[in-house]
Length: 355
Ligand SMILES: Cc1ncc(C[n+]2csc(CCOP(=O)(O)OP(=O)(O)O)c2C)c(N)n1
Image 1 (cartoon, protein in one colour):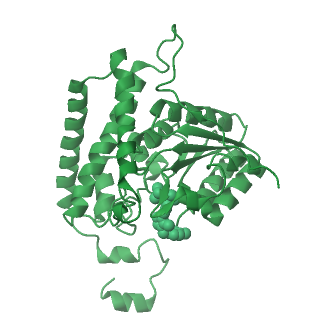
Image 2 (tube, helix red, strand yellow):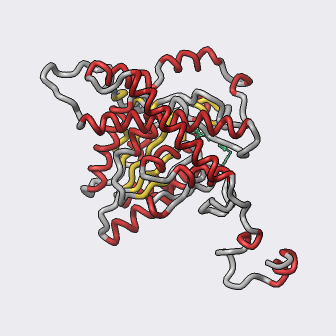
Image 3 (cartoon, protein in one colour):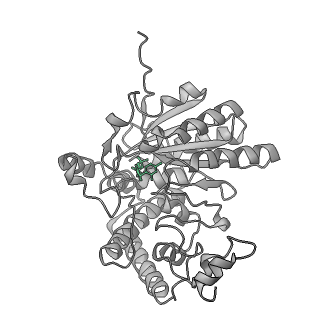
């Protein structure tokens, strides 16, 4: 029997010893921006979950504990690049300038929602930020991302696509289709797998027999990188390298960001029923925000006052967005058939009573 492939080593930056003469690895403002964006996601997620518990939105998927994977990767793409997210990448949309009121309206699904209430919450989409709604059906966004990347390549557009997925998505046929096509055609795409170790109740050990996720890229003929997903700088640098390779015509990369889903799968799940929550407590000690604070503080880039001001600002902006969106009317019934038919069929017109 042949030996199993070995996982690439885990890439880390935050606690790795830095050369004595090294300066900041990124401009101070960018280092602070990464922190601000992560904390903003943490604050927004907490408040959105409360809205769900109060019955004001139907569902929510948190990124709590995964903010470094979301923001570190999202920050590596240019405005002209296209993002194909999964459930937990709303923070990437915000980072790209998606307004908070549209973010909230998408979750509420009323007349303020660009998608006219047709999607579940957390399915943000806005062509102005090149951000494409996922479909809820796990992994379908991956061939879409590869197709868009191939289209860009054929048109000689200087565009890279981000294809986000969870560990569970690697068991779907669409993962194979996308990875194979991307490898054969050297598509300018970066697959970013947030391996949060659970697909609802299925743990990673039951998801795959291979040594992690990154190693799978070898079989498709391109590089897989395994990165500490709670280390925002490691995620950021690994993604920047992958984006640069894709832009230079060197083809795709699969990044496995090893992290942990701290909460339930969504607002409709109780993880205590199927996993040992003492493990979750251990991961709370490896919190991506705390780890990054510990790196920023001695460099004069973080203190408690900054923390307070970012959190306060995020809360105030979100409260204002919620107030504005909740005052909006429901979607008009006629929108049910808008953009669907060139001519609304007679039976729908009759059922719609005035559509
Ligand atoms: C094709 C398909 N199968 C099953 C489901 C039900 N489902 C919704 S989310 C989910 C788990 C996804 O896990 P993962 O890809 O690891 O992402 P995570 O939610 O953990 O970020 C499943 C099985 C689905 N939506 N689509």
